[in-house]
Amino acid sequence: MEINDANINQLLGQMRAMEAMAKAQPAAGQGGASQTDFSSVLKGAIDKVNETQQAAGTLAAAFEAGDSQVDMTEVMLALQKASLSFQAMTQVRNRIIGAYQDVMGMPI
Image (cartoon, rainbow, N blue to C red):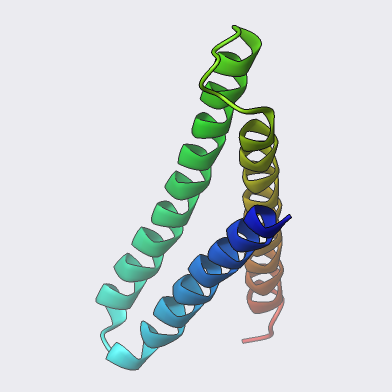
């Protein structure tokens, strides 16, 4: 249980760090640079989610193959972390789409 809470707290810490980076980006005041920075932050987050899912899949495959060095709790934690990070990424995507639709719906 402690390991699970630590992993969740680590993931929340990463999400907060990414949020702080995203909030700091507009303060730079550079139009083209802030767009590039936002896209790189977003790409980095998507890549991190992908890495988490790949690692969980690798652990699960090793456990299914009978690797004695892979513990079931380790596999379950990795799978839950991958699931949680994917759900968080989906929520961020939904909010970005919602914001885009709001901006596009504004009268000029």
